[in-house]
Length: 123
Image (tube, rainbow, N blue to C red; front, side, top):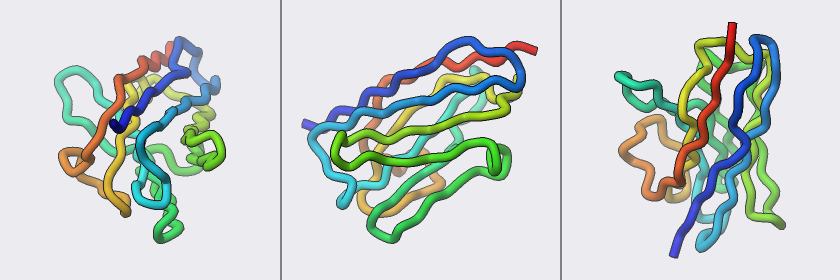
């Protein structure tokens, strides 16, 4: 059974940092790309970042380039999202999700989802 568990959210001030963690079980990073997606009430989920070992790809949305860094630890089966210089617009529920092999920019294509973690950035 595939399980994903996101953690690390919280309340920070503008300019602050958080590191989100996604603990994965029941899958290997060689077979699945892991994405970080976020959702604001009333808006569609968007892909913030994604990492794929299969084609050695790291993707970042334009809105987070230069501020967010995705990484993985194969030994721990965890994926991280380091978020620096946070802005109020980053406030959202963040999810980690898995898609077979490659990253995708389309949220519905992710096969497995974890429960979200709330990130709130105060101005």
